[in-house]
Amino acid sequence: MGVHSICIKDMAGIMGPKDAYELVSALKNTVKLPVVLHTHSTTGLAPLTYLKAVEAGVDCIDTAISSFSGGTSQPATESIHYALKELGYETGLNEKTLKEINDHFKRLRTNL
Image (cartoon, rainbow, N blue to C red; front, top):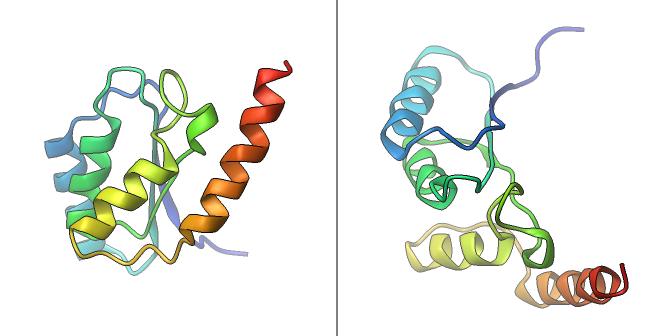
């Protein structure tokens, strides 16, 4: 079986950018496994925390499509994608597809 990745779970959204950078850096320098960061937007720190984690080499971050993002959810996928793209990172995400996904779920959310 074995371990396939390490996931840092910050379900309260209290991890700050400095802590994320230091923890991800330490893990990436110590283990050979992919590192995932999961946090929530509850405190408003999540986008900054994700940015510093990416700078430290995190392999994956959890986001939510914008119609369901923010608050107790994760930061918006589209916003994080745009910010990372502007900073020279390649996310592998297709902006047209992201819009289609958001449009679909925005309609569903409106009908809830």
